Image 1 (cartoon, one colour):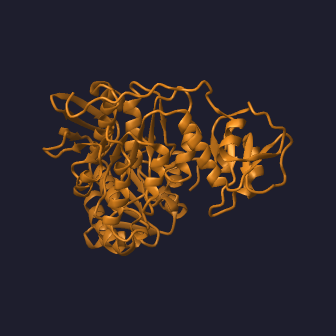
Image 2 (tube, helix red, strand yellow):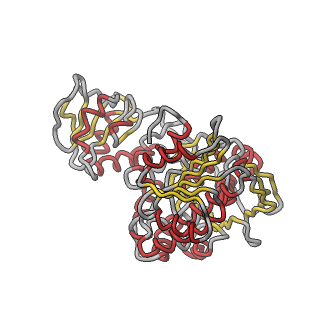
Image 3 (tube, rainbow, N blue to C red):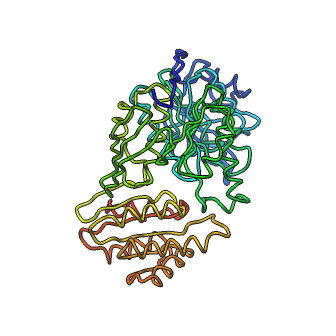
Length: 476
């Protein structure tokens, strides 16, 4: 059994596969102010963005950067069955069901807590400064070898996204895999009161972390991430990256059993014989004590060894045999816009456009550098780095000079990348203002057979550029 003892999922479920109006009213203290109430009416989940409200869902009119009350009618137009509001709204279709509450975000959380109480399945919590979403998808895939998994959608990892995840829980779900982000102290601790993790994974906390400008120090980020393992019960498992000194140092902050994963010689769950095969994927041998298994990951990047090991560790802790979990990892899909290899007749696209941090940019450039074709890197601004920004962009430029043949910098900060690359000897560099300008340039300079990397901070929307490169009808 290696370093682990097994923790079996709790199989206690209720008989409904969605929540009812009565459940929602009891949990939120709300009252129906429009439409004909039927306490047994069921809903299929929740949404806070009217554009992606699914048929049969409940739209929560949250007050964030924009007031969700302005989009209630649009949510109904997209198929929402009900809306939760703080005040009456107009332009409602016939039959629209509207529930009024004192605070919509508070109501969302209370409903999520009620559903979590109704379905007390074990949960895996995942945090870290890089690698959370890929680790979440890998963990869901590994656990999927034996169980039906409820997992965080996309990167919905905050005080809104995590409760919405639990609004999709069904009786057939046997385990939850929940990604948790951190911006302020206490945030992950609060999310853990909802998630109630039995297994906690901390991925990486690099020297130049994403969102650095929002926090006072890297040590403060580490302490914020440690809130996950501090919340674990004594019979839980804390999976910590043995190859990251900051993560490893957090071991004393949990009462749960600590399992180190990585390539370090003292890792309980260790990767050996690692073979990174560029865009063709990754192979290594995972060793858990006397047990070992070959792992083949269809995603590119040596840095993903840690994600795969963490996933195996969570699967083992919850009773999935390591060989079954490894087989499941071999068929997992890449998360959208995260090291996703997309091919057309004319080019290969490494779509890592969802977001960018210094560590992730370096890892993506290493994958690009491994291909035998002409290598084109489209690198956008790395935002929210604060005082670390200039050095980080210069370092990215020096690495781009080693790993690329053509560099396109997108945005103001990316000019530092291109200047640094030119100083390091890269001959062909370009600077553009945004994704639309980048698309025009790329359509002019790309050659048949090129391999193109697209990466940048989320607010640059370079995912639209990536889509446009492989879908001629799409626009950046």
